[in-house]
Amino acid sequence: MIPNVSIRKSFGISFIFFQTIFACSPLNYSMDPSQAQPIGERTIAATLANPTLLRKSTQATFGMVLLHGLSMDRKEMQMLANELSEKYKDNLLIINSSVREQGISEDYSIDQQVEMVYQEIQTTLRTYHKDSQSFPLFILGQSQGGIIATLIAKRYKHTLHLLGFITHNAPLQGAAILTRGPLAIQHFKNKAKNGLNIIGTKVNWSLFALAALAKTADCIYPLLQGMGYKKFAGIKDTLPNRPCTSAVYHYLRNSQPSDRVPGLLIAGYQNDYGRLFRHTITAYKEAHQALNINEKVDQAIQALNEATALLVTGETDGLHDHLIPLQSQLCRGDSLEDLTHIGNTPYAIGMPGNPAIQCFVIRDITHCNDIFPISRREIEAEEYMMHPHRMLPLLFQFIEEKLAACQP
Image 1: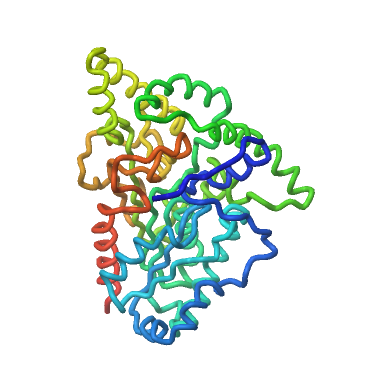
Image 2: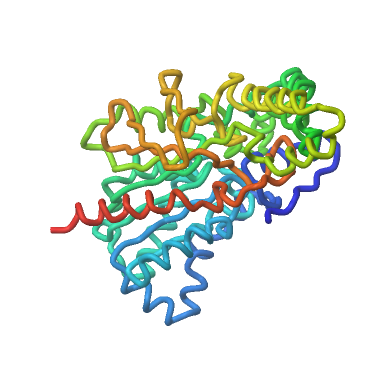
């Protein structure tokens, strides 16, 4: 279970809410960038204190770097780390990155974070007596971490022996929900109210704080930065149409073959509250059976579906994981085919102009285990981004194909 975030109703505290836009987890405190611990220190400290672990790690034949999302920490990647360890045993060195914890993912720019992760990788490989230019390496990023994983592949292909990078529900073209204004939020509230009431929740007031802050961010941040205030650069870089997302687009869509690293983009969507809250809705209908309201309930849920899609994607029929549009996760535009027909099996699609990139879409996947940021109402499902199941065979197949391809 991911704990709720408790935020007081004030504009000042709304900055703290903004820090958690992809969090789905408790708030991390935001630290001054100048106070960051030395790169790699937190990652290798436990290993240096454990000679057995160090000895096993030096036996590894390839590595996997795991990158958490915005406002998260490496604990959020533990399930994936466990699955990878169970699959590959001592053959795999896992670098569960820690240099972006404690507010760094919010306060440092994406470019700074890319450099920090790169230095962490180098430091960790040296600790494990691995040569960075010959030791086979993969890098996987969830949410904001997917942007960083892609840019590391772009910038450090020739200094790391990268066999592939993986993004998982990543806002590769930004999070459009950050651009919604108060009027859009009020429109959503009006359209969604009845449907949310049926599933036992209501719009979180913090959504209004998000809208107010996001709409003024471009005006406020330059002023604050001019006064020496250096917070929130990582958040601002996750808005649509930022230089870092443009760099991601050009790398995935327009890079030269000689610059390409094989990539696996795993995306997910769940647009139907009727599936997310099937048991609650059924119970609601049964409790009001005498009123013969089934049709009205279905209409309210459909209105909620459309209002949420409009808020997250800008289209009433846009696909999303309740936080990131599917198009953004796939670095695609309006030419993306209709994917509402896919079943429970991951669905493969191509990346235009880049055969080195594999893309898969998994239906019934939400970003969090609740419908954050609309509400903290938990979903009635066991699978979501940080607790995945169907993506694991895709990940293992990708790893094994790339390892086989690099064998002499």
